[in-house]
Amino acid sequence: MHKNVLQSLVLVILVAMLIGCANRGTPSGGPKDVEAPVIIRSTPENFTTNFKGKEIRIYFDEYVKIKNLQKQLIISPPMDVEPTVTPLGTASKSIKIIINDTLEANTTYAFNFGQSIVDNNEENPYDYYKYVFSTGDYIDSLSVKGKILDAESRSPDSYISVMLYEKDSTYTDSTVFKKKPKYITNTLDSITTFSIDNIKPGTYKLIALKDENGNFTFQQDKDKIGFYEGFITAPSDEEYTIKLFKEELDFDAKRPKQIAGQKIAFGFEGDYKTMDIEMLSAKPTDFKTRRTKDEKSDTLYYWYKPKIEADSALFLVKNKTFIDTLTHRFRNLERDSLVIKAVTSGTLGFNEDFGVSANIPFETINEKDITILDKDSLNVPFKTSYSNYDNIYSLQFDKNQSNTYKIRMLPGALTDFFGNVNDTLNYNIKTKTFADYSNIRITLRNAQYPMIIQLTNERGEVKYEQFADQEQLFDFRNLNPGKYYIRVIFDTNGNKKWDSGNYLKQLQPERIAHYPDLVDARANWDPVIEIILE
Image (cartoon, rainbow, N blue to C red; front, side):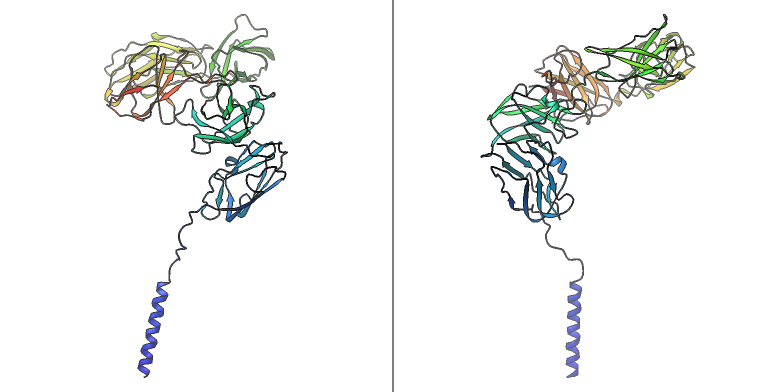
């Protein structure tokens, strides 16, 4: 009897131990929540008419929070005083909107939350929730649709604002600089199409902005802009294509600043190449000036000799239609010491010239005091050229593969603006073999000349380009191996550069076509590309 009881007790203990082992470990917690939150109700109801209130409540079936509201929430028409949306940063089962602006009569308002509403646990978004109400008797229901392109890049930026300005008695071409639009939408992060909804019938100007500071107005120095030529009319079944571009800045000159002896810095915006600077104050009869551009910043350096003894001077700055007078006060500073450096060092490509630059403008070069010797110590003939604003002397000579070149500049080979000369300068450069490079041949079909062909890297930076004003093959030879995109510019005015657009002049940018594939230019490889243009 006791034996059976003992056996039963042992059996119970073993079963308990097995059950305990089976229950050890972390609970799975069930399947992952992948469902978006659900709206239970809103007060007033969505699509309410004759709206008179100041508060809106939206209730959900679970706790939600709001993310990235500043970029995601689009209110159309925009409000001068932004509404207060809560809660921010905490979870709640409702969202409250307090309207702080005076609403327009008989107007439909739309709050598009994008993907800013997410559940609290897994952050599943409630995609593109829109709350709409009207201060009038009905909800405006028309739409304007289209797509956004970038005039220069392969794909447009994210978060593009697309806007409609009503053509009324107050509208002018400069309205986009001063006032918020009548209606607005946003392409958000990865969408290139747009739909401006809940608009009323009318005539509108269609504008797109990469609105960097989010104020719904155009700032030329910061924003990209695109526009539809003329006006559009709603309703319409047409889908509109808008190309974004960065305008060339209107020229402006900044206050001059003395930064070294006989060296004044003139900051600027816009195109500096036709910028003219003239000192109006009295100056010596042997007065001479030079101008160079800073390598990185938008600054022109104005060099002068001899030294001016006056305390101040008046300068006239002109550039095309721009004209202004600027006062400058001289400071007693030491002149810069001459520093010369090679533009290229190490390996020199077959398409490159060897160049030297300096921190003071060059005045003369004495080619007799310069020698170039190859690896066999044979003299290599060369020619020179000078780039004024860059202040670079270039040495052009025929280069052979697998060669080395020793370049020597004796004292006095280079003289700067103030009469300083170089010490002895020695440079060693080498070349690779032709097999170390790639060649690309491009044929255009249906081309309308003049054309520019550019090879860019994946960031859109131009590495090589060619211009043609009549039909030809485009041979890019001795390219550094790499991956390139091909960009074709329809150079309508034949000025050998891409011209951007201008909103006030209603000028669209010059057309650019992109070859769709990334070209792998490998060493000792010669891709042949045919581009058929529309």
